[in-house]
Image 1 (spheres, rainbow, N blue to C red):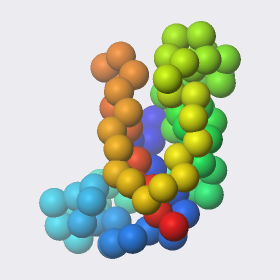
Image 2 (image 1 turned 135 degrees about the vertical axis):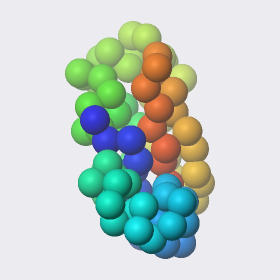
Image 3 (image 1 turned 180 degrees about the horizontal axis):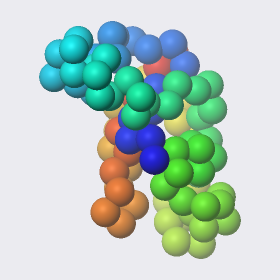
Length: 89
């Protein structure tokens, strides 16, 4: 399961958002990060391995059925799983 997501062109270096330092980024967090252009949150959650299908999101968390358009940094919690999402330009 991927724990971090970068959407679009990142606004700052990823290690500043997801890691303690550059070494932590290279050693741990980089392999746990999904880099994508996808902005539809349910599809991102499927790609990360948090849920099995978009329909699961629609049934259980209808407020998660949205498109992430603006620059943002959000945390999505699904049960005990957490995904941190940096939305770039």
